[in-house]
Image 1 (tube, rainbow, N blue to C red):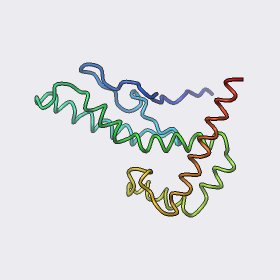
Image 2 (tube, rainbow, N blue to C red):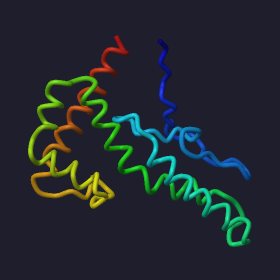
Image 3 (cartoon, helix red, strand yellow):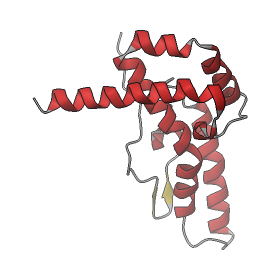
Image 4 (tube, one colour):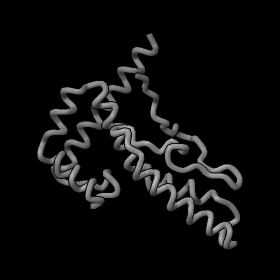
Length: 150
């Protein structure tokens, strides 16, 4: 058996060059935590179609708005997923303990129902598990940096 790395986009990678654009896996639009990319593929395809129609219809001079809009729409969830992934990778027992709390489940429910497009806008007790996972991710990055500089 063999496995392959998921095609994850790096910060600064361009999604548009001239009259070509990347969507889905080709654009590296994979959720860092779950490894899923179906939503991102379908969403990026819709935005790509809109950008191409705008270009062909003379409403836009290029496809750059596609990359900008995709970044704007997906960045909040991708950022939250990266933080959660780092927390789970470095501190799995603590991260799973946090994830099993009722506020974390309420947060997950709202995210899955698409009632909360930006995790940063969460308030109340649902904010606590998110902040805890972010703090763990920050600690993981510091530990990785310290190990790399030794």
